[in-house]
Length: 431
Ligand code: 4AD
Ligand code: MG
Image (cartoon, rainbow, N blue to C red; front, top):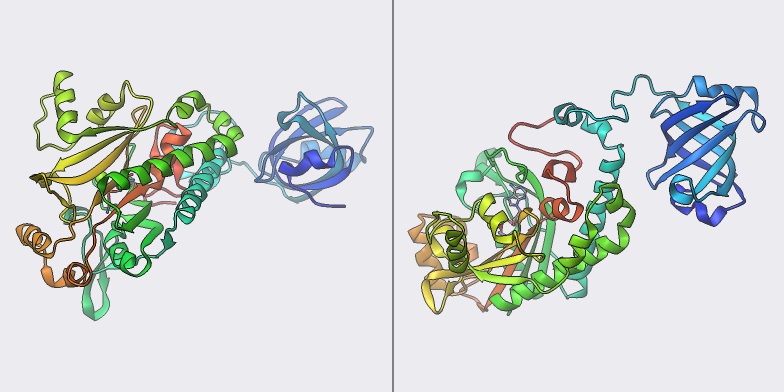
């Protein structure tokens, strides 16, 4: 008999097929019992009735347990009331393995318990939905970039220097060469790539020794860095907006069921697919002060500030033109004001905070060198980066999207840790 996937059963209405997967739930009432089967692509109800099957199959109701692995064969039958709209009238049942005492029951458990059992928790419906949204967001990002002439350019993870400040570097012993660091962002390498390919991106794990225990920080997360030659600050923001709106639309059309499982307010997400707002850092500070904040003009935004800024906005907000003291060495000085750099942070609505950090890059050799000397950076380690400003330097810009931050917002979940299969935080390295 033909093995099919749960997601495809509507094409087999009235036919006999096999399905393979795991028992999600079981209930029985006298001459009939029901199981919910999940196979990775969806959930379907199976019905076993005493009249249709051998006694051996019927008695499996006393043997099977949640998460037992089985193959069932039977007739696909449309039923509007069933989850997914179809059910299977089971005739045969093969047991691969009976699961003993599966620890995660279909009820509420504490977060720590679930995280300790992450290897099993991944099978739960909400986790399933989240991982599928992550998949869709990942491919939407790459599709948008491919359609906009960005070439994939994989940056190294083992690096000799820092991209984003030295306080969050992870060190690794590196043979006779001393120390290596795990990459915080591939950006500096991508800047070399544009001189060959014009527009490039990478997409992979990056690492930050973040000592903060917040619901927005991981120590290992996935970043997509994009970089483009001849793109300046304004256009850089337009590319970011185009990308995020494309991702929203993809998630809304391809992840309807998943968003429903997560009880995401999709109207709110739909509203975010409209022109984004732009505010300078100074305007943001003035606004926050008018709301009672005591922050100064050279301070970074905290999580509360970000929430307050987007409180009455349905769309993400770009915060642009930052004081140079609080931004990275590579950002281009604003030609209109030497104290300001042409950086942008994109803040998601609904309190989800920063999802993108980007900027136009300093392309002038002397200005970049001055800034690096000012920050007491080890120049020898960055000579290759300075070289880019010596041999055909051009205006260029780029940005980095935190995949898990973006998925947290799109899926509307409260904590970043559920958006990656195995989250790493200051307090968690296992499983
Ligand atoms: O703003 P960040 O630090 O920017 C960079 O690393 C640039 N070099 C990127 C570039 O221009 N190519 O990080 C970019 C994004 C943040 O906006 C946030 O979404 C995410 O990465 N991010 C984190 N996500 C999870 N956990 C953390 N600890 C994160 N730190 C940053
Ligand atoms: Mg940032």
